Length: 146
Image 1 (tube, rainbow, N blue to C red):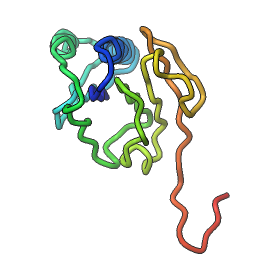
Image 2 (image 1 turned 60 degrees about the vertical axis):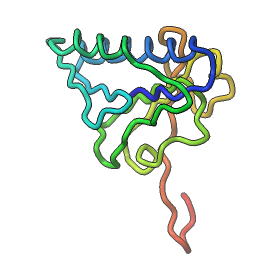
Image 3 (image 1 turned 90 degrees about the vertical axis):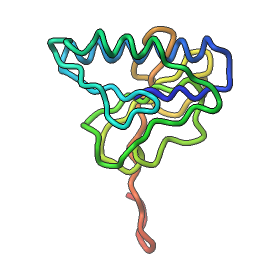
Image 4 (image 1 turned 30 degrees about the horizontal axis):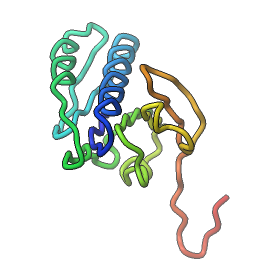
């Protein structure tokens, strides 16, 4: 999933788009994946046959970001076991839909702004670094976290 919001230099968005493209191609080639682009409600299915890859690649090349760009539309529970959230800027917090699920989430940021990111460094891809985020559990009133 690509979050193209950015108030920084264009190089940050370029790095995020390249990272999203590299991840989508590699994951699609290995096991199939879905790519959610800014403004889309439905992800692009990229199967092991890579039939949809050329169209996805062309769409990635046309991504425009900026401060006025909307965040990806996320629906809780609509994710598989693993989500790569590629962002062009540091996020004040991870979107609620990713915090409330049981999926493994990897936050991918341009290396230039990745310093101090929370989570364990789990990958490096095209001038970006990915951090595995620990799943969060909701704690009800009167309960203690384990």
